[in-house]
Image (tube, rainbow, N blue to C red; front, top):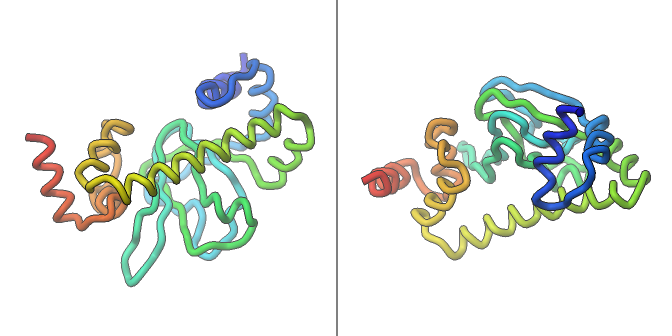
Length: 193
């Protein structure tokens, strides 16, 4: 059994079940990459060449605005990751992506993914599943930002990633929640009581 294929199957199974052989074939298109803590994965105003799956670690999607970094997304083990808008359009964006801790990725290039799509209907389903997963994640995040308080968003984030405080700088969590570090500190104290 191909270890990488089994991992990919585990990640995709909640969205789209397929035989292990399919995932083993798909895994041959994935290239492993490793990034040190705080290392840039994609620079601002550059084109995203890869769609990533985080196999170990965490990374964020950021925007530099008015001399500060704004965290748009936090991604962890077994999640899809990348500047998806740039990946789809193959145009640069202002976003940059960065490893938050030592991070290992399996990545597929834009060209390889499109080559894979030509191969079979199952390949198209794999791409559809990844796209839908990224869209649902982003849409849920936007709805939460509009409908939930910062405290409720933090509780939801803790449910998704219970060890977030150990793995992610508080300034990134606060930015992701759309609040100041001071407000985040008050929320943390309130929730841990």
